[in-house]
Length: 258
Ligand code: CO8
Image (cartoon, rainbow, N blue to C red; front, top):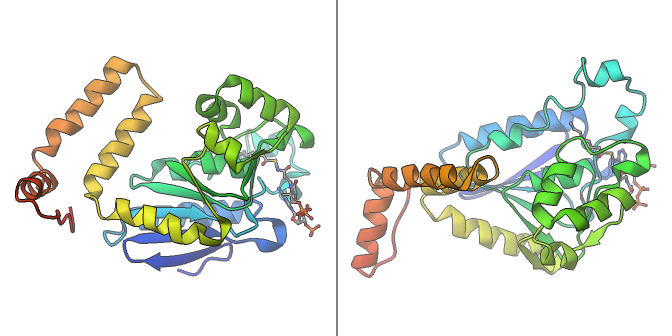
């Protein structure tokens, strides 16, 4: 399908979804969020795809929700109307790994969308921020919740209250980002990371993602119990048979279709 505000690139078992509103710094509007949900569900259900990369352009991942689109909203548009919000969390329903690749700015809703990815890879020129306070609103897609859980209360409060942006190094140091690569080789490196995951058994990757996300929603005891169910269930899958046989036979496992 052709999208107005996204570009799609297929790289074997990895699909790259690129946010693409260059004239508006990839500001996240209603159409883009609808298209993003559509694309995410499509590739999550596609047996040829094991990993999804969500990225923007070299200059910007996304500079937040579209301020021009929402500037005249009333309370009736937002709470009862739900004009902004209803299509922002499709990404949380995706079961395959989603890697956020950030070059340039990830601000406001852009930073919140990035934090909804499973992990983040950034270019050395990336900048993260939650400047909503400067436009008179609080974050609305998890900025006050995911940021402190990720980088701690003090740094999160600092960023949220002052609107200070952090650079890639600070983002990596605080755990917001898992790896940094030079801007010039970012996509190549990110695709290599994605391909490493894509060669693993996708069903196990999905179970690991499910279990890790559970850690943020439950107690330690319940979380470990949840994980244990997946561990036990793995013994009913071809991936476990192939993985363990390959290890014992000193050969590379082939998890194709597993
Ligand atoms: N919305 C709409 N348009 C934008 C946005 C935005 N968020 N950001 C940039 N643009 C537009 C600019 O208006 C400009 O348009 P034009 O050329 O027509 O004047 C164009 O993009 C280029 O922008 P700049 O000229 O400002 O480019 P610079 O390189 O000088 O600056 C920045 C880049 C630093 C990214 C700057 O544009 C900026 O600060 N943008 C706004 C960042 C911001 O405040 N983001 C938070 C928005 S509020 C939010 O995200 C709430 C999320 C809640 C989600 C809730 C879901 C339920």
